[in-house]
Structure formats: structure tokens, C-alpha cells
Image 1 (cartoon, rainbow, N blue to C red):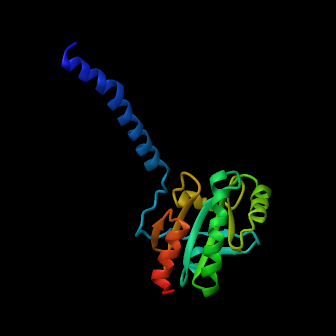
Image 2: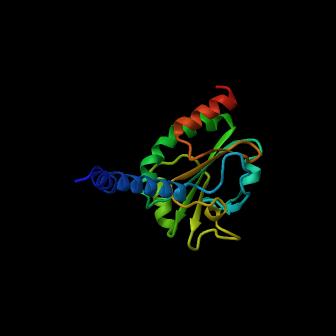
Image 3: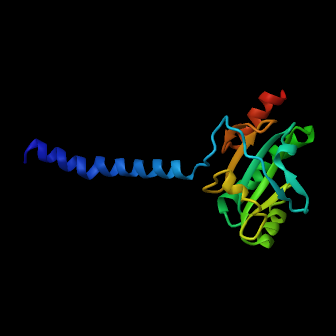
Length: 181
């Protein structure tokens, strides 16, 4: 066998499949990440909360850092992540300078409400975004170009996005930096 033939076989059997796998995961990552970027202005919206109150993001976000947390009662990754946000909320909400807005991507309000209760989510600002739920004039998930859950945006006061899909640890670090604790 010639050296060139061996080299071609090696390339076809190892390198090409490895490149295809890397390409697949890169494309998947690019597709699934939320569409809005760090440094852009978050779209304003109004929606009904779980308690039936109208929430307008611009009013809430005028003097607070806000984490918009898109999740679903049907999403196992979201449900595992929910408890990790509770200490972040408990640490920073008391300052009056931080709020979490949970936005459930749902088709059945009853499942979403049961998940909030079961996961003992302490933040009171919960919105449902899905079939037949608070879709006027457009869904919040569409405004924020949500392609998968969980997805998160951390907004500074005034509505500029300062982090896309941050972890609880990253949110703590950013709030320590900006709020000085």
C-alpha cells in the first residue's frame, strides 16, 4: 500500500468524523443560544403575573438588576437548576436592588403553577408564556429570541443586558461587583 492511500484512509476514518462531530455541536450551540447579545437593550414587555398583576419590565428594571429566567415545568434541566437560584434570590432580593422574573414556557398553567409550588420558588414574579397564556401582543419568549430552556438574561438597571445564560455563581459575582457586597 502506498503512503498516500493509508493517509487518505486515516483521514476519512478518523479526522473527517471528528470534524463532523465538532461541527455538529458548534452548530447546535449557535442555534440554541438566545438571540439577544450582551450589551443590547432588553425589549420591554407587559404581562400578567401569577397573582394577576400586570408586570411591566421597564418599571421593574428602572432601579434594579433583573434576571429574566425562561424555564418550563416539563424541562428536567430547568427543574434541576431551579433550586440553585433560590440562594441567589434570597441573598440579593432583600437589598431591594435585585429581582428574578420567572417566565414559564408552558401550555398548561396548572402544571406550571404546580412546579412553582413543588420547587418552592420564592420569587413572586412568575409569568406564563405559551399557548393561550399571556400572548398579547407577542410572546415574551419571541421578543427575547428564546430557542431553548433554560435561558437567562441578567439586566442592569435601565434594561441593558449584562449577561446571557449566566450561572448562579456568575450572577453572584456580577452583583457583588456592581452592588459592592
